[in-house]
Image (cartoon, helix red, strand yellow):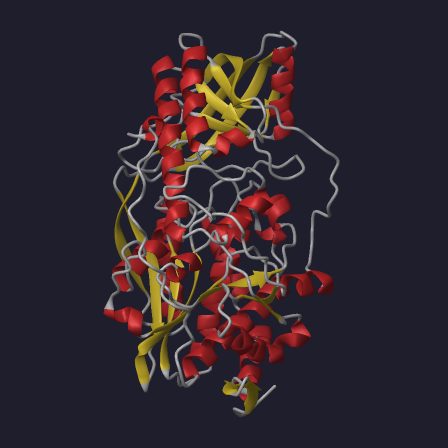
Length: 562
């Protein structure tokens, strides 16, 4: 812990390097902790977002209510600059209010289900026979993450089932395999885990990727490693091409006039429905048939019955609508104006949107509450900031980081061409939180060697709360990547996993019951301290060299061309 800036000199081969220790204002840290621990409002924010408002699917009416509430709550906290910032056409908004699925043959019983986003509801109750026609028999078949093989499989599927699916409920995914759990379902990072994370990954010895990207590892950990090194826009391009192929399948199912599509998930250890979407939010994309995600155990029962040649019929009713076919995307932005360096910006953010099956508590009302609380703390303490502190609550993260990407392109630069805006020059750092409600344990530094010692110094007053590591790896899958893609210092906070991946991430039990209030209080205090010190340090946060513009993509194989 330091109240002053010191200097350490190293002499290597006659070259002297000066390393400046980061100045930490312990009196301000103490005041921040007092506000965060003794006057917390973090759970008030969570309560409204998750319990009162509920899930916040991008561009939906419930998202729009939450965004307007956030603006009003920030203004109530004295942050008068809070505002909505539209970023253009989103596409179809979607909302659901109810679902009922019953098996009526061979036995009458209820099935646990959630509708899939951007698929339509039914016109009343529908009764139909069930057919098992999986696109992939093995849910983990590596071919499904190879775009050429996926396109070929869709063409083969169309030939295989043409004229056979009309009026039927199609079970579109393979039977979910079950294994006895071998890992704890709730986890906090141990000291050994944190030490291991401090080690950089070995360099890759083969070509990292092609452009356009045509295949991904099906294994989750291997995919994560690849995402760490692939340019952000290439990741998004792969996802968009994959979605276009799914649209080909949807067009076939529509032509067949299927009664509905039902699927299940491979995440978790069972008993939980992890549900996202089937079909696209884009106004230009085909609207799919009614699509439902079933609990794995219930789905598997249907498959086994059919495989034993037992006739199966279901009765179902889905209340889902498209309230607006041309909805606008909107972020929430708020500023605490700086003084001597007010043109320079320190930014923190979290995505406000969520998936729809739970209430979006851990993903990501928790993160939103942390950054709103950090903003409230800085305002309540009336701290004089050299730089402007900006808050961003993002729309459309779950749909492809749409809000943060739009913000970066509008204000900072184009990640494909690397044409930069004037605000890029005066932007210091972006800090993000988006991994559930687990306590912050450190910062993922995106390989920025210059930032690592800064963060380690700023963590020292929080070591007693378990915050101690600067992980020299890239994080992916959330909004800081949009800033990183244009060469700006951008970092995601490392959090304890708790039951985020095993139970709540994109699931129907993503509720406030899985929030740990004390963890959010600590995270909010740490975020407020990071932002304060970034706003007060002498220089902007150090930057790595700018990324190069992306080259022109190579020609696509014929089967992938539109």
